[in-house]
Structure formats: structure tokens, C-alpha cells
Image (cartoon, protein in one colour):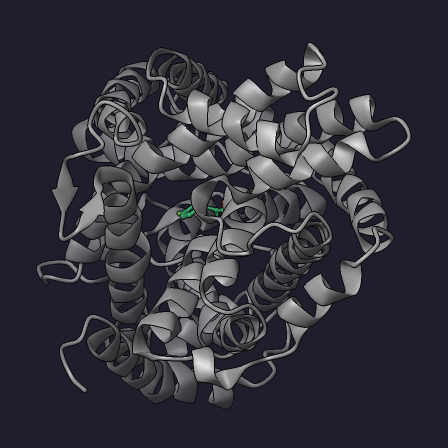
Length: 453
Ligand code: PFF
């Protein structure tokens, strides 16, 4: 049970609310901050192509599998799998999800904190009169400064916890429903400005013209990781959300719509950013700070740039919150249901633990810069652990579970809402989750970490 100090299980109410909440989870910093910088580092067009194919062939089936588990069992990720497969080791998927949730919350809140700081900078008109060089300096000085990024990170984590506390329907659904459409409009506006900058076309060809010489096993694994991260799959966030779906929800349509919306936003973010990168004479592989250095330049060259900048960073912060609540909810639902904690206690514990890990992450750009794990700083290694290891492995286990442990009848029953809706392409879905996805993910993973060549 969840949100249930009164004993009733909370849930989403309207169809649009469900899409908005699931899309709210999927659409976030992963699309707008992470996609452009990772694509930029991995050669642009070819990365985009591989990432898109992974979303279609692997991502949507994993998402649908999570929906099936969650709505069937109506429990947190661990409890859901245990109730379908009692006495087996399968619930370990849920434990991996909890670990992934903390790892992601730690670095996600770092970047979300940066975004909040940029809301503040926009508000005080802090970009005005700066050229791209000095905007770069502003960003770099802020990122290593310690106290400020930590402050904003904590603000963000508390904000997430407050929304988590107000429960599923009142909190998550209400916020997602109103705000997501605005983000889309704003991104479109940004794209128009970026595309009309002199020299913009070079950015477009960087993003859309694949150069396959850039592709190697590590790039392929990072495209898989980006697809998983961006779709919120592989760690039970969508198992948890689907546990709040009503029995009428058409799971296949929802998975499809959410994934398409997610991809569209990522591409729009690319179109907003790369033309500007090239027009400004910057490098596309600028790393984690890419959007923070590029976009303030674009805003300055727009009529009404002050308001655009403000609205953009506000909406990006909100997109980050609607994603981070889905991450935190994985842990909170687990603690409430498996340890009979009150929602308030569970949220508090999760908040404190996430803040603890998060501090190391934020400081890894400054005071803890010298601390490395596997040749990466703490931030990069946590990001790598989540997107290149935990999420792909989680996704692999989830499809194996639905494909091989659950029976076809169970799965079809859930997909068809007990015979109420027609299930199209069941055979294709089944074939993908039984064979294609597990084999593909295993090969990409082993290849990407250098285990097989
Ligand atoms: N999909 C989110 C984003 O793109 O920002 C991040 C995320 C949310 C990852 C939930 C994983 C997750 F379970």
C-alpha cells in the first residue's frame, strides 16, 4: 500500500494524467541536459541513430514489460516482482532498482541544482552583456564553488520530497499535467531562434548526418544507456508508476506515446542546442556544462530573452522534479510497503540518504576533484554505473522475467485489460522480450564494458 496512512491505495485518475505522469518521469534532464552533451561527445548523428533504434526496439518493450509487472501486482518494484514470483531470486531486480535510484538521485540532483541556480541567474538578469567566453567562466566558477551548488542541490531534493509527500494524485499528477505542455512550446521557440542564427546549419548536419566512423562498442553502450535513462526504464520507476494505473489504462498505447514524446523532446533539445553551438563557434563535446554555457547565449540574442531564459530554466527545473519524484518514489514505495513505514518517515529517510550521496557528487567538480573511480570523477562514475551498468542490466532482467518467468496468458491478460482491449503485435512483443532484447542487451553490455571483443 502506498500513500495510505488512511489504508487506501493512491492512484492516477485520468488518462491524460497517466500519460503526463509517465511522460513527466521520462522527460527531464535526461532529454535536455544529458542527451545533447552525450550525443555531442559521441559524434552526433550516428549516436542519434543508434539511440533511436534502441528506443524503438528495446526501450518500448522494456517499458511495456515494466507496466505489465507494476499494474498486475500493484506494488512497489521489489514487492511486485516478489508477489508474482514468490520464493525466487527475481525480486533482486527490485533491489538493484533501489541502488540505481540512489545513484541517479545523487547526480541528478547535482544537475537539477545547477538548473535552479540558473533560474536565479535568469531572474537577476545575470547573463546580460556576457559573451560566450565569460558565460563559460561564470558556469565553471559556479560549478566548482562548493557551497552554492550544494545549496541548490538540497533545495531541489527537498522540493522533490515535498511533492512526494503530497501523494500520487494530488502531487505528481497535478504538476505534470499542467507543466509538460509548456515545456514543449518553449523548446519549439528555442529551436526557431537557434535555427535562424547564422551558421546554424552546421549544427543540424552534426545532429542528423551520421558519421559511422564514430561508432564503437563504448558509444553503442552509451546510446543504450541514454535510451534507458531517458525512458526511465530498468530500475522499476515505471513498475512503481504502473502500480498506480487504473485497470482501464491501455498499457501498449501508453508505452508507445510516452516513448515517442520522450524522443521528440530529446531531438528538439538537440535542435535547440547544436545549431547554437556551431553558430557560436563552440565545441559540441563541451561535456556536462554544455546547455548551461550555450543556452544563455541564445537567450541573449532573442527578443524577450530575459523571459525566455527565466521560463526555460523554471520549466527545466520542473521537468527535473517530475522525473526525480519518480526516482524517489521507487525507494519510498518500497520502504512504505515492505517495512510498513509511514510515507513521511520513508520520504525523510530517502531524502537524507540521497542528500548524503549527492554531496559527494556535487563536490566532485570542486573539492573532491582528485577522487577518481575507474579513471572518472565521482559524478561521472555514478552516471556510468547507473546508465551503462545498472539500467541495462535491470532492463535485461525485466524482459527475461516477463518473457520467461511470467506465462503468456498472464502477460496477455494484463496487456488486454482482461480481454477489454485488443492486443496487437503480441507475438512480436513476445519475441522481442524473449530473444531479441535479452541477447542484444547482453552483447551490447559485454562489448561496451570491454568484456568481449
Ligand atoms: N528519465 C529521466 C530523464 O530523462 O531525465 C531520468 C530518470 C527518471 C531515470 C526515472 C530513471 C528513472 F527511473
